[in-house]
Image 1 (cartoon, rainbow, N blue to C red):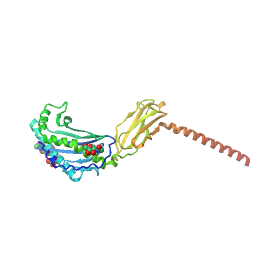
Image 2 (cartoon, rainbow, N blue to C red; image 1 turned 60 degrees about the horizontal axis):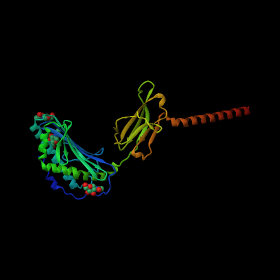
Image 3 (spheres, rainbow, N blue to C red; image 1 turned 45 degrees about the vertical axis):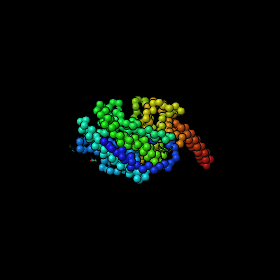
Image 4 (cartoon, protein in one colour; image 1 turned 120 degrees about the vertical axis):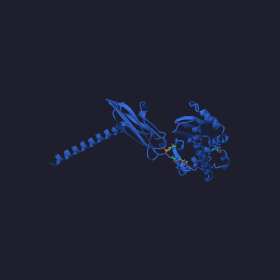
Length: 331
Ligand SMILES: *[C@@H]1O[C@H](CO)[C@@H](O)[C@H](O)[C@H]1NC(C)=O
Ligand SMILES: *[C@@H]1O[C@H](CO)[C@@H](O)[C@H](O)[C@H]1NC(C)=O
Ligand SMILES: *[C@@H]1O[C@H](CO)[C@@H](O)[C@H](O)[C@H]1NC(C)=O
């Protein structure tokens, strides 16, 4: 079987904790892999690593090494530790391929086959971490690693039990998986949080603007509030009347901008007469509590505008009267 338990012995574990910082929020660290088996002799495996929403590493089938997508992707691991970790992944990738091909033969599974693997940990404030490792076959979860052993997913087909039995006989691999999930991943994540700090804590302020969408029906308006260019992703957008949240507010999908920021829109269907006085309110971590508020039809602006127009008329009238008297006097 996978037999990479011996790699445990290769690991040198110098203490790399430079940081005594306590994590402020939970961070999800994920290794995602997709393996496509076209037939018994043709396959490819591609993988990537995500820290939260950010991709830090990529690993293409063509490559023997895991590439850094971010310059800080080695974390606080020494080059030697990184080389060891990479070796473990390389051994894992080739044993995984060989094992799947053997299982396919043993269980007469049909090609083409798609296997997806997702493993990692979620590190919570206070240094608590939860780990997971799931495997999906043809788009459905079939098994996962729970604590110390492999277990079938609730709806998994019957043949998965046999796979589980075989996998659970391999103590070396089980130990390696436990050690990776329990110790190495959280250690690696803590390092990444340190080296990638400035990028992970990046804040970009949203810009917002209003427009009207296609009319939802006679006498109705679709108010659209666009919010764009913000980072990180969590944002709160709501149509308001004064302090009253408008429950009819519909949020669109988060769309990625090309510069790693996000776009989101919020729409509201209202009777045409009721649009005045509505406002779109945006809350985002980058705004430091100063919400963006945009008024529909500029009811606030229009008060100012009315005063301005009245003032301009008065001034004009005054000038006309002055001019009139001036002309009369000079005749
Ligand atoms: C987090 O836990 C690790 C062991 O898993 C320990 O070495 C480290 O000092 C802890 N860090 C903090 C900030 O408590
Ligand atoms: C397997 O699939 C590849 C790519 O589609 C094809 O070139 C090859 O001939 C196939 N091999 C067999 C044994 O069917
Ligand atoms: C993927 O990598 C494996 C191992 O290096 C190789 O045998 C296989 O042909 C590659 N698959 C493709 C589609 O290039």
